Amino acid sequence: MQPVIALLTDFGLADGYVGVMKGVMLGIHSQTRFIDVTHAIEPQNVRQAAFTLLTTYRYFPHGTIFLVVVDPGVGSERRPLVASAGGYLFVAPDNGVLSYVLDEWDEATFIEPTEERFHLPEVSSTFHGRDIFAPLAANLAANVPLHALGFVITDPVRLPAPLLETSGERIIGEVLHIDHFGNVVTSIGTCRWAEGGGIALTPRFNRQPRAVTFDAATAEVQVAGQSLVGVRRTYAEAESGELVAIIGSSGFLEIAVNRGSAASRLGVNAGDRIEVRLQAWAEAPF
Image 1 (tube, rainbow, N blue to C red):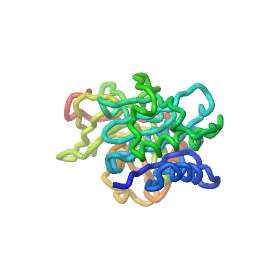
Image 2 (image 1 turned 120 degrees about the horizontal axis):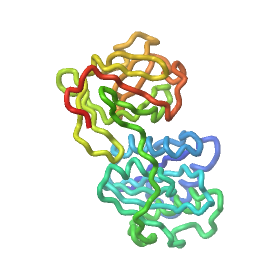
Image 3 (image 1 turned 90 degrees about the vertical axis):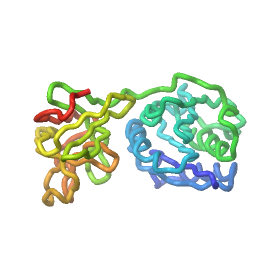
Image 4 (image 1 turned 120 degrees about the vertical axis):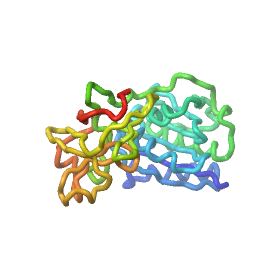
């Protein structure tokens, strides 16, 4: 099968950064197929990139090579990193951007790619995406063995886990991401609809307690001084312009405005606290 390299960066599309990386990779392995996950990550926002990767990578075929370049530490002592987990390969700076994905897998291999023959001959101190990461990804696409790139490490940088805890009849989380539509994605997930109108919550981010279930209709979501009673299944269950709590497509609790922006309405930012008050647990909390 034609190798696939999926790119995720904060480069935008106004400059030639993405294009030149693809050119470098084609020069190494001309049969590569490229998929652009996004190049609209907020500049230097490692956590946003980590979340975006988490919510997209499983929809790609096994064997996909993810080239993730959100690199505020470029030119510093931070290491490059190549990882293998879950049937996928990842090339990125070792700054925590792979944390959320790697936390999903008990078994993963981490390589510090020190073999300079797999870099470009001249390496800029400001564009490792072109000179180090793109060549590494292309060599993987050309079937260079993972261990040929460097040596195994066991201490990749990890981001702190997003807030998710319980206290009495409350679930406490934080705003994790705000999407293009202004939907406020929280750390309260993974959630799925259960029988009888319940929501089963299995904590994400390297947490492995059993799922707990709470009643969707009576749950009270509190954020930025607003209280929303009930979690809906679709945006359309709310009136146009109405705030609504839903379970989003990635399984996280979201706050949205039907045909509007919840982030603008509420004035919230990533990291802000969110709380769900419950009438009762259907099962004991984790």
